[in-house]
View 1: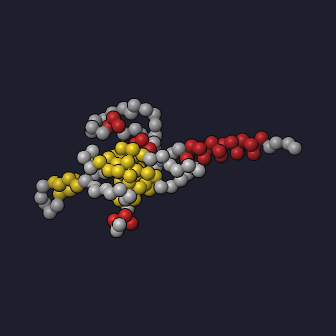
View 2 (view 1 turned 120 degrees about the horizontal axis):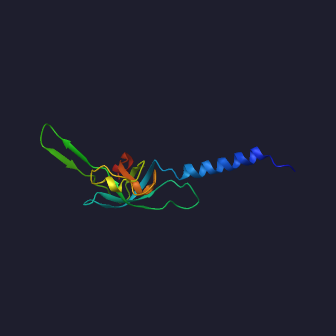
Length: 131
């Protein structure tokens, strides 16, 4: 039997493409395992399996907070009140965020992109608020 080189190359490239896309993290649902309100960070468990194994927990993800001016008053800071078990939406930054968390323009220490180490919790899904 003769092997089709184009078919073999197509299968290899398709497999490679699938591997690349499975390592590209953009946005996904997680369950809150724990929340540190002082640091505004959370340990979260991704809820969607992409392999046979359960996804690894993400530790120390930054959590989005807000500053609002209400009715013309002084600005007020609002931090989330995450509870264990809340379902949250998490995004991964395009590049490493660690060196920019102090507000300065910085160079990333690594070449990582869309990595779970640079996850940010955007907020709680409404379905969790009724629990």
